[in-house]
Image 1: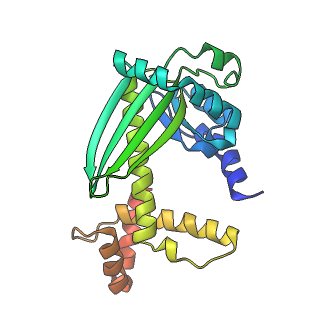
Image 2: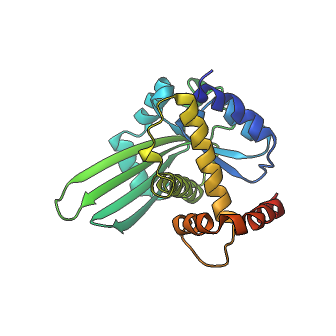
Length: 238
């Protein structure tokens, strides 16, 4: 069993251990499975699940809902539309959030197995380079058990923030991109170890305010003396 199949199998078991009441769970396209959605609902939680090509028929149906005419109607009415503009380096990033609640056809066909399927969402991200004038557009589609546009926008923003922050630290702080490991199982295990290390680094207090990268250097330089303190701090968090 490869790691992706294993992740799909383990997710419902993990969800079973959590208290999800009044919580919104997000997941990437890999975990957009009705078993996972239904397990979240059974634990009194809500879901916002990303869609990609691994759910080809469902993805295409959701994309068809968001044709240009429908997008213009949603923008005009405003109730199910939000827009955010930010400047990032030499680019202006515009994120637009759309919801559609009238999805009876989808619920009766491709989405019939997803309990509490309430809405479908679109996030349209437009990135304009203010120097070259180049414009890049990206669309992401979601199936949801929520109907509030502000909650949808907030949930997706948090998901992207966590994902971007995690990937940045894996690449910059722990140099994952420089790994020369070829064996998939070894690479998967190392990825888990790196993520665990990042979690521990965020908990450990070295007495000074350091970036995670500088915290690693400090611990390395004082490892023998500081190791008992690391164990003590991590134990107190258990």
